[in-house]
Amino acid sequence: GTGEYSGSFAKITNVQELTLPEEIKYIGDGAFIGSFIQTITLDNVESIGNYAFRECPQLNSVVFKGTKKIGAECFKGCPKINLVQFPYSVDEVGYGAFAKCNSLNSVDLSDINTACVLHDYVFYDDVALSDVNMQSSAISKIGEGAFAITSAPTGSMTDAKLPNQITGNGDSTLGNLL
Image (cartoon, rainbow, N blue to C red; front, side, top):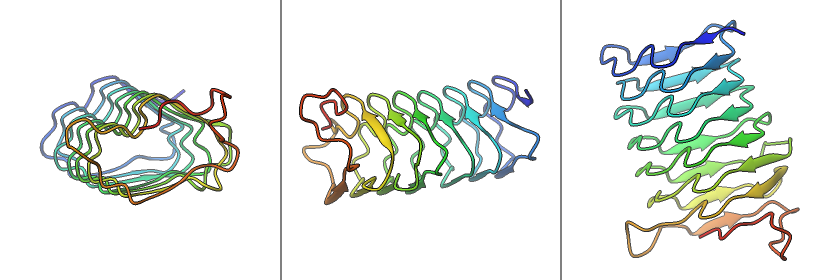
């Protein structure tokens, strides 16, 4: 497949907007870690590697279209991301993918129509997170501590809609969510 090499744009400070051509199907591990990218549009990227955009201090907008896999700690520590809307195609969101995104306040997973797994600590320590919508999604499993907060006495969660098929009745589809 066609993709960006691991670490190829790490710590780049002069690129603010990233729009990848449709030929790019995957982004390698750590490809943009610590870069100053502000906006990302991923139209045809099917897989985003581990740590690909970790600790990007200026990143505030991410648009996914057709993405299937979001790697572990992919967007961890991106302090300006405030909204994430997942496309219908996502089937895996890796360990801690959006952990410690201090401004993230709204997550919309409702369009996901594949048997998606949210791994452990996906939204860990996202203290501003107040609105999570996944009610109509096809999420099949939510990992341990997916929405856990440890850096503040309480989180901001005011509205969370779980997927209809996740009951938490000992069926191991729902980890210790909080």
